[in-house]
Amino acid sequence: MEEYIVSARKYRPTSFDTVVGQQALTTTLKNAVSSGKLAHAYLFCGPRGVGKTTCARIFAKAINCLTPTADGEACGQCESCQAFNEQRSFNIFELDAASNNSVEHIKTLMEQTRIPPQVGKYKVFIIDEVHMLSTAAFNAFLKTLEEPPAHVIFILATTEKHKILPTILSRCQIYDFERMTVRDTIDHLKQVAQKEGITVEDEALAVIAEKADGGMRDALSIFDQAASFCQGNITYQKVIEDLNVLDSDNYFRIVDLALENKAMDIMVLLNSIINKGFDGGLLMQGLAKHVRNVLMARDPQTLPLLEVSDQQRERYQQQAQKCQIPFLYQALRLINQCDINYRQSSNKRLLVELTLIEIAQITQPDDSVGSGRKPRRLKSLFKHLTQSAQPQKAAPQVAAAERVVSSEASGTGSSSSTSPTSSSSTPNTSGQPAAKRPMLKSGISMSFKNVLKKAQPKKMSIIPGTLDGSDPNARPKDEEQSFTQQDLELQWMLMCNRMPQKLSGIATRMKNMNPVITEFPNVEVAADNQIALEQLEQIKGSIVSTLKLYLHNKSITLSLRLAEHEAQMPILSRREQYELMEKENPSIGKLRELLSLELA
Image (tube, rainbow, N blue to C red; front, side):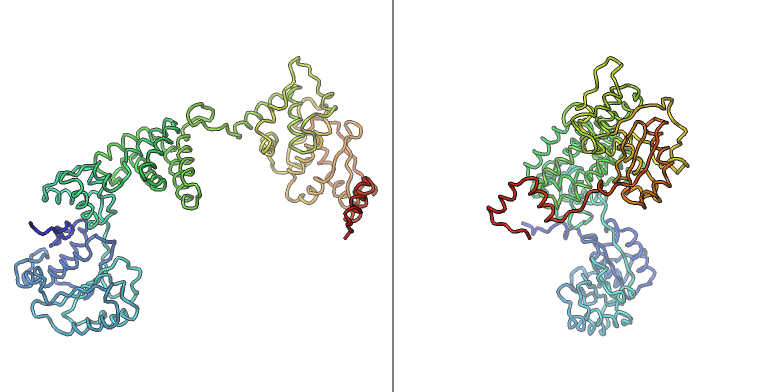
């Protein structure tokens, strides 16, 4: 029985032409060999498994080849090439810096550079994982790297270029190796499978290529694993079973169900996925990649960005025709937010379920009824409320209902009953039953400010005569409309809220004042002190104009006075408060005596 060799070693490239996915770099190196313009130090950097060390060995072999080809390849027949192939060459040294990273190892290497080559022109030193060298070893290596002997060439390889000292980088020619594309990986795996006599499916190779994440060595290792599991017939189903990869059909089904607003079916599918041992976070990551691919498949310009097989590309195109761009954008935003919050969530499954439900409701109308129905939005409820309230102010029952909402919003009226003035000033002359108050209160107890903002005009630039910029002459035809104390207090508070920034001080004081209807339509306001009274006198005309505009009564008058001393609320100390309570309720004093309590 022949000795088994893994594919990553068995099919390791031996020439520049067999290197996969690095055409630009290999062409540059071949041109350097053919022209004889060789630098004294090279740095190969890039992710793992993309061919850095392999290219370094091929390059070192081509440098010492006695009869290189015209395009810069090694002949493979000369003494130097044969010695390299048989691993007995004394001109090519390979050092692993991960295990030989001390100053002593570097000094030993520097001593070997003094000896000229026995066969060939150059001594080539390949130092792999050079970023593992210590700072002292880098410094010891620095002088020799800057001015090496004429017969010495250094080839450094690393996966983490940022860890190398800038003084080292400045003395090397830097070659950045790229990750393998999915298409290049699939094509190379097809060649390996053909040489090994293994039948494969393109979708199975696409899964292996995506799992390898741009590394050809990883792709070949996964290929060997799948070949052992499948016994010479690599299929898509066996590969996802062997690698424990979630089937892409699940992502297609989730998007199709979301377009149909079938949130409950998505929940059943999620449960089956979790029962198979897959994590919810892994599902969301895969779904994000899937939705991104669907978005890319909508436009022929972005279609080449899909690193999938041809069959998968066709499926993405078919699903992209059914998905609108706003749906895909919103789905990506929700999935990204779920991915951000996933690690911090204490109930991860609930977070995933809520995200999938929201995705299933993106295309669903607000008031539709069905599986996973959205709750009624408060925003739309307020819209209906204000639209029905504004054009029907002439209807007495609607006007009475508006005053109920206004009184509850301002916090000055009772939520259970309306004032007698409101009842008497708005008789029911239409013959229709009065509007029921609970229907108006439903769903708006937490957002009265939104209702009031929509019901009132927006703040504009100041026009002389009003405090909120409204034109006092633009009044409705009915300028003798009656109003209640609750209406007055509501409009007073709204007027204070709309006052410009330069009047913010007096607006704050006015919010603590209580306007009173003394004799309809005369309004009286008591100021707490003389300063507030003087400020009110300065803007009295604007206050009257604003109240006339919003209360729809051109006969309103305003009288200002200074609050009487006895009318002001005295400030009591804690002892005075207790004595007042004991005076009103003697039982409190008896309780204190019974418990032997003393006043602090």
